[in-house]
Length: 243
Image (cartoon, rainbow, N blue to C red; front, side, top):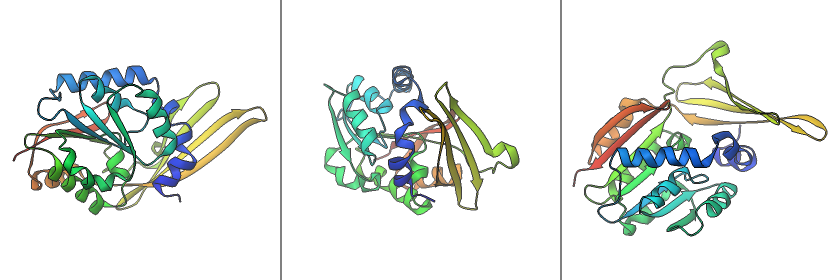
């Protein structure tokens, strides 16, 4: 079983952008979400994107007027992010998102952590600490946006096999195996080469955590939840710092 970083560095990072689909449409959708939910710059005009990937959130944040620090641990995705944010007010940082406390002097008014990024941490304690750090470094009335999948109910049998994406050259299937505190995720890729179809496999763990636990930790760390809905299959939370 690979670590999350090993999984991205050696496997998923090689086809992550393909898996996610057209950047322009995904980015426009997220930008519209920011506008619809009034997550626009009005205090310090600064934002942090945790687990930035190839730029869906970062590009949107920059386009609506934020100066953005974009943090990720995968070199390949950061290289793509560099190309996708050329000419924008974006600082790209190769780092572990758990070290967000080093950006306290940046005074962000918005911190986003999207996809399943928070579930990629090592355990529930890491998630709780990250939320604490987010609440600590946000300016007064600043906001955070978290999205993650709900793994509280275990899938069994054939339901564990999830077709993710396919085209004439690639077929990606995700297989889930549930433990008490984690879900083991296997990304099974078939890729067409000059020599024929090749199978590539890598597995890693995601943390299983209840929505109520996330809500509790947010509210214990000086933030008030103002939005808690399912958006495109993802639990989506917007919280505002109280003081």
